[in-house]
Image 1 (spheres, helix red, strand yellow):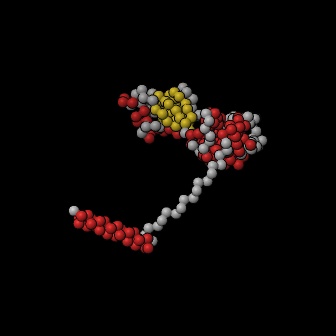
Image 2: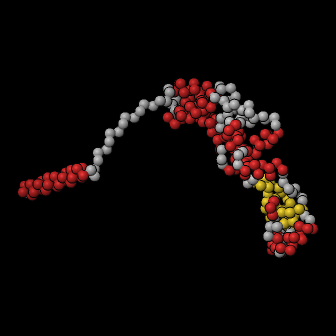
Image 3: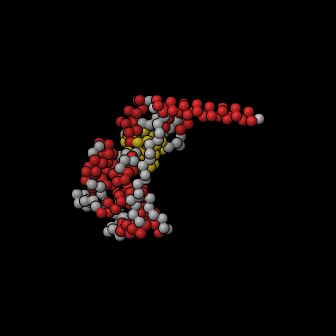
Length: 251
């Protein structure tokens, strides 16, 4: 029994020495590196609870609040107000957001360059909100413009928003208005073999930078009678004998 214990002890010592030798070998070759000492965490720069309450109140007391702030900013101010009132201080991320809001309130934008009394400017502002809400670009700017009717971005940003040909072409279509009105008779180019060549406009709507129409065909094929077509202006023509003849010849 004692002999067996001695043998087991010698085996364990030999195993341990072998493992240590292997580890030492890999250390010498540079395959194993010790973890570098971790730097001590920096102390938080977040102000004290009562100081943050005063900061939030100062933002709320800013003249014209919440003018110039996005809906997300306003929601954040309201939520951290309750957060602080419950005795919980701000996190580092929350403090950073509050600092950005404080800067916005401290440095109001100069919007004297934009004359809101000009009808063309009013139309462009209204269309910019509609256009960029659909595309998703300039989300922060558009959110602030929608939340505050007096807010306008810096002139350079506004000019950049209107510097591409797509929004300008769409704006012209929008201000020109729809080509057809509800009740108009139109010549249909949208699968005329199925939906016929004559239709009556039922609804008109602006969608995806174009005018779209719901129209009821009057001479559709038997399997398509009573079915409304939805199409843009490119597929409709004014009702005239010339247009009708041209479509019928193509069938």
